[in-house]
Length: 227
Image (cartoon, rainbow, N blue to C red; front, side, top):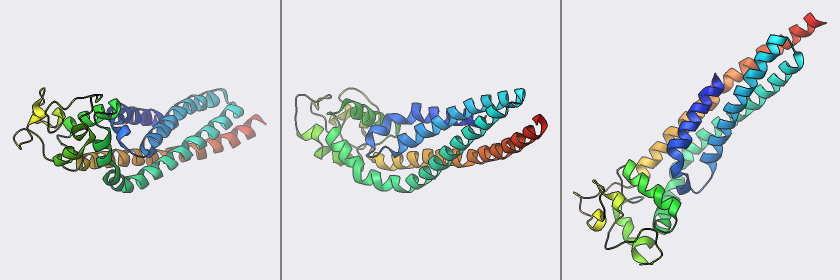
């Protein structure tokens, strides 16, 4: 059950939030998420092994189950701890790197351009820190013809607009675009998800520890019975 809970939470995180991973400067978030997903999958397999071991009173399978629980326990503790540590660092990381990503990669990298557009629409924001940042971007200043999204007289990307329509970014008035930077909403959102991952990892690790203790007791009792 704990494995299934982990799988559901991590798959939800991957499907809904990993579109923004390309905007982060480190891989801590994605590595932690996939490590926790691996722990969930191993826990499910281990649960099946444990049931088989108990059903057939097979000490070898039960010993393997204890070993699997130990691996899951260590993964959950490590990921849970790292999630809480990274949660305290994510704001500093974004302050140093997010604006650079917006300014240098929008219109140049297709993956990051999609992520930025999606973020600006989801969070109702414009620019990393403020909407004026776009005036200094490669997308607006370079006039490169190979840009993924041409400027065509726009002052900000269309995804900044309150109501997104083609070429709506030609005006940057407060009635047309959002003035709040994306860094604030993104920081809060990532912190929230890291807290969830940390709580899941550390909280469910207690179940694995309890399972190992009970399994060891059963292992010893089976030895006495079978001998």
